[in-house]
Length: 404
Image (cartoon, rainbow, N blue to C red):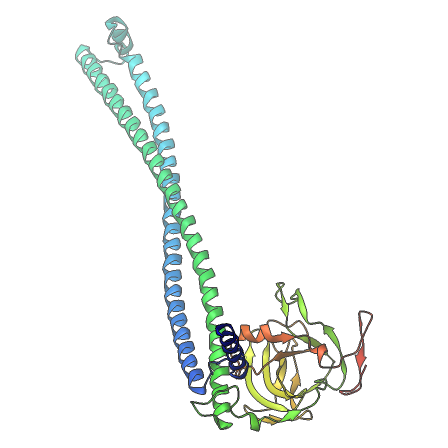
């Protein structure tokens, strides 16, 4: 009896489990606005840190300049001391010669020699005595001068050594400061990258919120489902340009502009001259980026094709011909192909005119809003958009709809 009851209970639990769906935490428009506030706070913090780092960088560079000036002055001082030592040595040699000349006349240890030397010059004996006394004083004075010169040389050499030690110490400090400058510069670059990405995400998210509100979404509504009735549906994707050919495939590659091995999350298609760009399917413009340093002018469009949600990406545009929240069809010209470095000089991730055409699963800035999440949801556009391909050779296409 108990065994049958247990089996019945387990069966009921299984039925309940199958009937009752797993509860999913909904993401509302209000939640999205909260995330935007947090994103703006992150941006402001990064901006403040950038300013502080710039000030530290300026102070450090100023310190390096002061050290270089001090080192330069010390090198000049060492050079001057070397010149003084050379001059003092010359004076010592001259004084030593004078002393020897005087001692040749005044031989204190041999009176007879002294008398003989001075006998020729003295007028009388008194004059002779005077001459001897003066000569002795001169000799003593010169010997004192030589000792003073030798002391000065010793002091100058000591100063030279001290200056050399101080200069070496300053050079080490200078190298340390240069390392700090490099570290601060790297951090400043990291902060700038964070700020740029955050700034663009803030702009895109703010525009997306405005678009969702225009679709009729309320703060307490799930953004994954709200406004879906306003999104036009479609059954197929077309190629985004009338004529052209693929020049770069989806997948990991060495970026020809940045020389970094990274995911190329799109197909690159190109054609010369004035090339209109069209929406690949019916949809709604959810976001745009203007003059991005890596991507230039960009458009993101939401689609629902055969009941599945997608987002298409169009980058390196010369101009944008649509507006935020605009409903488009496959025949809507959304922009003009760009990417020419001589024209779109601000776009540092392009080496020539082309369209960067990407597709991601889900609705970017609606189902998710982080750029990294968008990249994670991208896939090879060839899976759902027909482009010619044969044996590894990329073929030319002459219209938007012919199947190859």
